[in-house]
Amino acid sequence: MAVPMPVAGLAVVLGALVAGYGWRSGVTARALSNTPVSDVEALTEPGPVALHGVARKPDFTGNRAPFSARSYLVAGWTVEEWRESDSGSRWSTLATGHEAVPFVLEDDTGTVAIDFSEDADVTVDPDRMRERHEVAPDDSPPRAVKVFETKTDGIPEQRGSNLNVLDTERRDGTRRYSEGLVTPDEEVYVLGTAERRDGDLVVTGDGPAVVSTAAPEAVDAGGGPWRLYVLLGVALVVAGLSAIPANWFLVG
Image 1: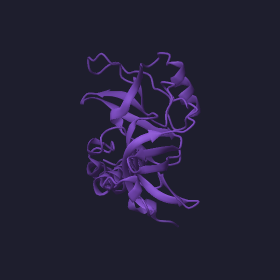
Image 2: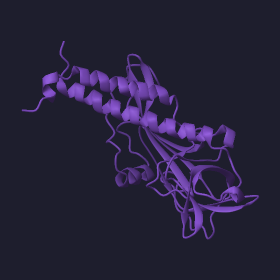
Image 3: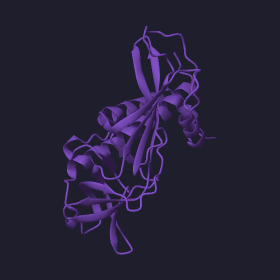
């Protein structure tokens, strides 16, 4: 039985996205394992670095996190959707991201500037997702969620609920909006890349980057079984390409 071209194409695109996510998660997981925590005073050259200390923000002006409106140095967010099928139910991640302002990490040996701009690919430890909103289909979301979705690109419109396949308390299509924060004067673990700016070393998100308020040995990059994601993605790409007729690739 021939597979329709749109289905084959979707499998290729979806597989590439899944494999890419798995690969990026694997890079971060390996960096966590291979980068020992060092003292600030030992930071003398550019390159990968892991630090543990207290987050400071001189003259902190009070940026507001997207869902809780709390002050933050780094705010990580996740949007998930509850999906049900004959085989079970689960949360499916729709989008993740973070907002950050420059701050200073201080340990017993010194201080160093941390600059995880919004363009950096930074993982905020999911264990710190302390603020959560659940919004069922057709319900009116809190104002903070409305504002967030209006100004944030890449979040699909919430779909309506199907009749529940499973008898659960949560409706199919329910959205969950989660937020994790790093706030001034909290102990933090930081994984990043040291770069020189005007002669001084600054830790940036140019490379694998994680910020967490967990102890260094307990930090979770949120990548899960990254090898499984890579294998699944590659399998989808291969299956999709195999379903496309060979003569489709011929030109002329």
